[in-house]
Length: 337
Image 1 (cartoon, rainbow, N blue to C red):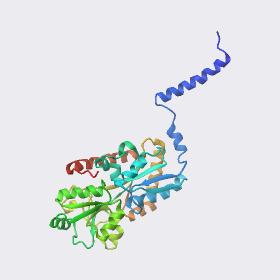
Image 2 (image 1 turned 90 degrees about the vertical axis):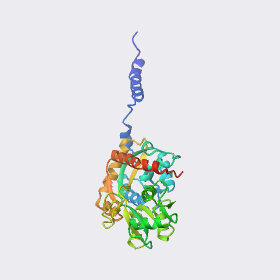
Image 3 (image 1 turned 180 degrees about the horizontal axis):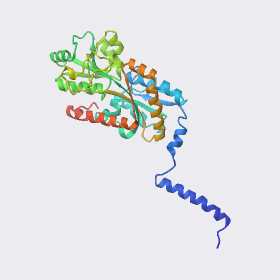
Image 4 (image 1 turned 120 degrees about the vertical axis):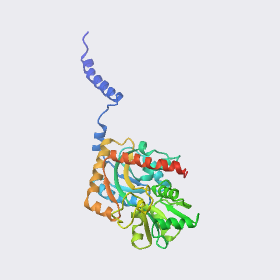
């Protein structure tokens, strides 16, 4: 019996539905990323910063957000969420909608080393985030109050050894490179020095200027005004080579402590599952912003060097940073929580 006209018309429709269903079952789907990119952004973009206003991470993120607003045609706002070594902010972003409208401007700690120290973290950097771009690197310096008698690293070590337990040091937060680097120096130099964590560079810097703490590892941009004003003194750089921003300051290796190499980086990531095309657009836009002469000049004035690069390069950097600190954390038995 020949099929009715109605049945003949239904067949192409049901065939199309079957093809669509098969595509989803096979994980092929439609080019959602392409569609998502065309509709992105459709609302305000939030950049969550895990440190207070005025910190090095905040300064770089705000500069980028100003240019990004012009390129995306939507408001781009900064929200500061300091605390718990940056992991509060990281957890908030990891739980956000994966549509590109919530980003995390992180640094070494919450993007790499924090899981080594915080057992109750609500996210895991390499699983919970999709990398977008590395933004800047910064000189990592050891600073003391200008009233401190030490003029270099070895004089500082001698003064701490002369009074075991009397000295303390600030960090920008538990699990940060600021914290871990001093713990590494403490172990290498056999120092008895007490850790006092703060929730970012500004608070730690203020404590050092006020004389509440004796030393601090931090990004140079956090202390640059006070160093220039003669209120703080840089004793050394915890990197493999001298910084163009501080050409007169020797590295730790030059002062007899090779292996204390702890470069700082800032980066932007998004929640895992963010469409690849949205990630690609954000990488392109932010990368072009970083290459602008005005951007580079303003970042350089704070001692920050532009990095840029691909999402894959950032993922490799995050893995390498975690691998750098894992044996140190295990050897020293560090566990703030």
